[in-house]
Amino acid sequence: MLVERARAQVAELVGCLPALLVFSASATEAAAMAAAQKARHGGVFAALPTEHDSLLVWSEAALRSMFGRNGHLSPQGASAFLGFLTQDRSGRDLKSEEDVALVAMSAANSETGVMAANLEVPGCGRASTTVRGDMPYAVVADITQVAGKVPVLFGERKPSYMILSAHKMGGPKGVGAFINLTRDDPLPILRGGGQEQNRRSGTENIIGIAGYGAAADAAKRDVDSGAWEKIAQFRSILENGIAAASNRTIFVGNEANRLPNTSCMITPGWKGETQVMQMDLAGFAISAGSACSSGKVKASTVLQAMGYDETEASSAIRVSRGLDTTEEDVLRFVDAWSAKYVKYAQRAA
Image 1 (spheres, rainbow, N blue to C red):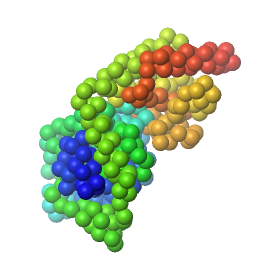
Image 2 (image 1 turned 180 degrees about the vertical axis):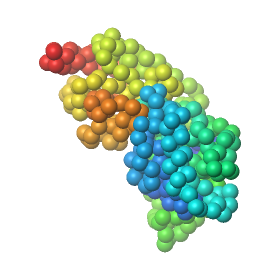
Image 3 (image 1 turned 90 degrees about the horizontal axis):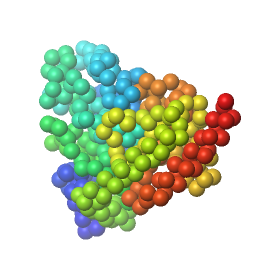
């Protein structure tokens, strides 16, 4: 009863039928489940280079510099991506409409907060122009960042699969979901016990799933009430304050539609991990990449895919806010960061 009630609550948040939702141990596991579906999509799985590592690791594509600095796929990038899929599939015969390449795309990027205009690669998809004749492409949508912050909306056609996580909307860690929007049961990667109607075997984390449902229910109320609009205003206050202190700082994707809670800031030459440590000492928890990659010190591959060089990509921080963040918190952060920046600039001069 607890599991099925939670299934209905999460499904209501993301706008799908409860029967299509499979609980997993994380969004990472859900990503692996999604990648495994390539067997039903021509045997090809490709993730855009700005995707989360949990999807990128399964991808046959290793493309870079496909995006403009607004975070959206450039025409040249789209051509290169489609060219990869076309070349990789050369000589293969399509057996059915479903026997097509599977492409992973985020509804919103975990590092920059930039939201996709729609979940279709330009130049492909059943509802748009295709290459090499009638060759559509199925989509895996990573909605981990958008679910619970903005309404989950799609264009003329929905993706084939979606993945998301509980803790990104205030739920417990260790619970995720894989959503299958096709007419066929998904191919499982865990077999044996028959749980989740044989779609994901293994004992369910019932307490975690119940918490997931409660978090989804609360998140839907927050989205419906417009609670995140205030957080978007705080983003503007923070970025305006930082810009006043440093005319060198770049706010990634600030001309694009972004999540209300995320700011990605590049101050060229000032290492991201250094900023993370200094702000930690000042009492603020930030990251030098996506929140779940906190502690890593490599240059952001997401920013490099957007055309930033290695120095710029290694000088980025991600600052996010929650519904309990206050304007006072934001102003204190601006003051603390600005003071640290002054000291950095003096040393660098």
